[in-house]
Structures are given as C-alpha cells and as structure tokens.
Image (cartoon, rainbow, N blue to C red):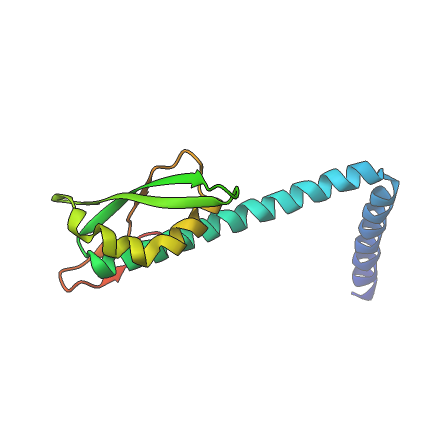
Length: 144
C-alpha cells in the first residue's frame, strides 16, 4: 500500500516537474501569449456578466414605471468627450409603444444606459426583457 502511494506521489511530482520545466523552456513571448489568452477569456466572461446584470437592472427600473414594457429601443453613441453613452429611443409593450412613460423611464435608467453602452455590442439597438411578469406584477427570472 505504501509503495503504491509512494509511486503515485512520484508520478505526480514527475508530472509537476515536467510541466515546470516546459514552462521554463518556453520563451517570454509564448508565456505572454498564453497569459493574454487567459486574461482575455476572463475579461470577456466578466464583460458578458456585467452586461447581463445591467440589462436586468434596466428592465427592473423600466418596469417600475411601465410594468407592461417588453422591450426598449436604444442607441449607443460617443459624446463630445469620447465617452460611450446610451439613449432611450422608445419603449415597447405588447400593445405597441408606451410614449407617455418615456420621460419617467429615461430619468430612471439614463445612468444605467450609459454604463450599459460601455459593454454593449455597438450594433445593438434593443434590450429585450426576459423577466416574466405574473398577474400580480412581480417578476421571475427566465435568464438561467
């Protein structure tokens, strides 16, 4: 039993040493490339999670004013200082447009839209709502 454990330990140690030696023998450029790929994957995952979180917050704030809202038409642009910005164009409901609530919704979500425009796809022109609304007005998350 001890011999098996010792052999497994040496095998693991041998693999670790082989990995360490392989890393030592790779060039600084190859290490930088490998690290770049890991960091990029981490960044893209974080960006997508941030965008999803902002869309949930935008949906919640919009529905606080206009519970029937199903989608927002938005515009992303760059202001005169070069900062990304978001602008609400219109609010859609199952019954059409909700123009009467637009000003109140704009006040509530303008900062969130600006933050969203940082992580949004530049070609995105809509935020479709995915939280289901029941007859009592509460929402449940369908984004799992």
